[in-house]
Amino acid sequence: MIRIDLHMHTTFSGDSRIRPKFLVDQLYTHPFVKGVAVTDHDTLDGYVQARRFAMAYEDILIIPGIEVSTRQGHVTVLGIQEKPAYLLPIEALIDFARERDGVIVIPHPYRRFDGIGNIAENIQADAIEIINPHTTTEENKMAETLAKARNLPSVAGSDAHEPREMWLAYTEVEAELNVDDVLSAIKKGKVKATSSKL
Image 1: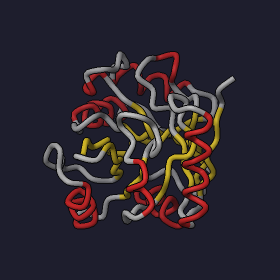
Image 2 (image 1 turned 90 degrees about the horizontal axis):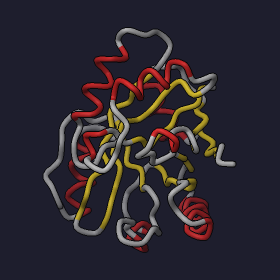
Image 3 (image 1 turned 60 degrees about the vertical axis):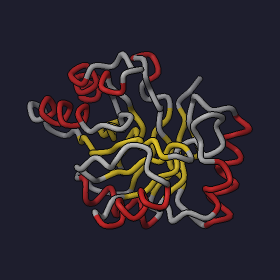
Image 4 (image 1 turned 30 degrees about the vertical axis):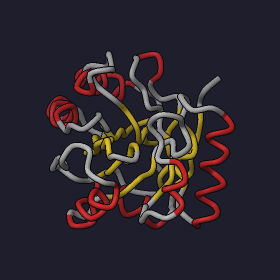
């Protein structure tokens, strides 16, 4: 079992102060979180840099990801290394991700302004983010209810934009420390959403 923060932003998101090298250094020294999905807004550049810095270390995992702005709200795609077009309709993004074997995670579905809301009840997703420290307790509970109703795996991520926010939520994954195994485990529901927020 490994612990992975499945929702992390770097300076390439534009609204984050976490530099990719700092992220990798902190991941390496963290006592138990050993993987992170770099999910910058509408870019893979942060992932590319973080992966490069991570090559200096053993026993940590950087997962490619992107938090995509669709016309209906945000959707996270893990495991792809190609950026989709900006502000696609959500159905087109789903097709884009499926064609590339991406893992579709619905982050903070009921958060105001950037969640996809009730659309989450019908789109083809692989997992629902049920713990996000930047989302209200009620909104996280609604996400958990949705995951149970749809029989989808529940995951968590810190959604960190500041260093102090890193690792406040993460996902326990029954997998080896490699991208393919982790993505497969998410799809199979071999995951547990966890919060370390005090």
